[in-house]
Image (cartoon, rainbow, N blue to C red):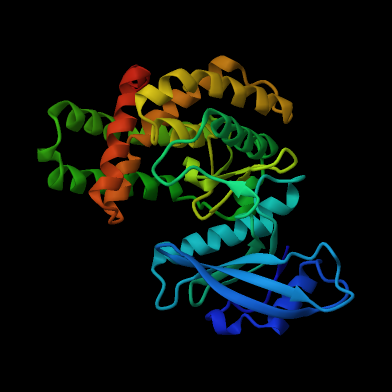
Length: 356
C-alpha cells in the first residue's frame, strides 16, 4: 500500500490521471494506464462517503487490474476531533498493520492519505460488493457467517498477539491514556445516569453504576493482559463473507481499532449485538473455535480457561458501550437494544462476581 498523495477534496479530483498515479504507486499498474473512470455515489456514513469507481484501462494494462474500486473519503467541512482521529487511525492500520500480515482478512488497500492539518483522509480499496455478502442490517449472521467472523478475528488477533512494541510503534497511547479514559467514562456515566437513569429499571441502573465504579480496575487489567490488534467495532455488519468457496472473509471499517484484549471484539460481536436466544447456543462453540484459531496462528501459553475468563471480563467492559453511543448522539433505537443485550449477557455469564 502506498500513500496516494494529497487527500481528495471531493469526487471531481477522481480523474483517470489521479487513479493511474495511485495504482502505479500501489504496485498495480506497472504498464498501461487508466483510460476512463466513472464515479458512482454508493453509501453515506456519518463521517465519510463511499464512492464506487468503474474503471477501464488502456491496451497493455495488466489483466488483473481491478475493474471496480471503492474510495472512502472523509466528508467535507470542518472535521470534528472524533472524525479526524478515526480517519487517522484507519490510515495507521492500513499503513502500519495490514502490510505486515500474510493475506490479511481485510480489503486490499491500493492507496491512502491523511492530512493532519485538516483532519481529512481517504482510502482506495478493493470493491468486494459483488463477491461477498453480509447480513441485512439489523439481522444477525447465519451460523456459517458467524463462524467465519470468528475466524477473521482469530487471524488478526493471532498475528499480533502480545507484540511487545506494537503500542509504541503505532502511537495510539501516551502515558496519560488510562487516566483520560477513566475520567471520560466517569463523566459519560454520570451524565447518562442523570438524563436516562430515571427511565431505566432500578436493577439496570444499579448494574451500570456497579460496572462504572469498577471501570478503572477493568481498564488497568489491560496492563497485565495479553494485548493484540482489536477492531473495536466488530459487529457482524462489518464482516464480509465470500459467496464462492475460494474467497476470503474480510473485516471492514478499521476506524476504531486499538491495542486491547482480543476478547473485547468477541464481546462486541456476540454479547453486545445478539439477543440471548441466539447468543446462548452459539457463544461457547464460537469461543472454542476462536481459541483453536489463535492456536493455529501461533499463540502459545493461552489456555481455554483464560480465554473464557477474558471474554467474561470483556463483556463487563462492554456494558458501558451503549452509554458512549448515547453520548455520541446515536438514537435511542440504536443504543437501547444494545444495552438490553449486553446487560443480559452480563447477568447470564455471572460477570458481577469478577468485579469483586
